[in-house]
Image 1 (cartoon, rainbow, N blue to C red):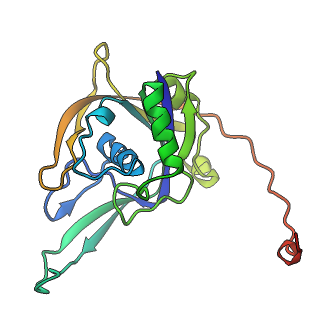
Image 2: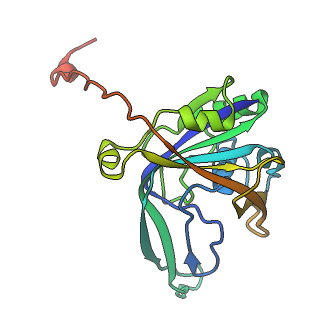
Length: 231
């Protein structure tokens, strides 16, 4: 088994597990269906494609920087008639940072890793209005299991956040047959088809760990005349 790590950071994110009708909520951490949807998009798959091969991967996420909940009101009109649609509420997480991990066969994750580097469709963080602000790819790891990867990967929170909130982070991992789930989420994708989206329940176990602050990076030297030099 191998582990593929993904960084999810941006001005806004939204990871709905029960969004319906005019109220589109978000979970406090990325959902399995949302992250697998990002991977399917990187592969260039249409929404009508069968996601069962991706759904078989084990999933986990670490909350490096807990986002601030934001509520927005959304208006729209029918393209053909111009009639106004009902006003909807959209909920987002502002300034959040997460590390997501998928665990599975090396060949499958290697294909996904290459797709993240050259995505078929541009990735977004739960909704198309939420682009990432940092590189997504954190590498493919053959020497780590899911939990070890989430425990040992460098903490990616901003310095101001670490000073203000301390070094305790939350980790959510998908349970196996031997684990006792602490909670259930309906975010196991069965179909992404817009005409018939379907999701199943999966077990989730949550725990907290203390993170070591990353070593302070020395700022690179800056030469303001470099753009004036010829090769």
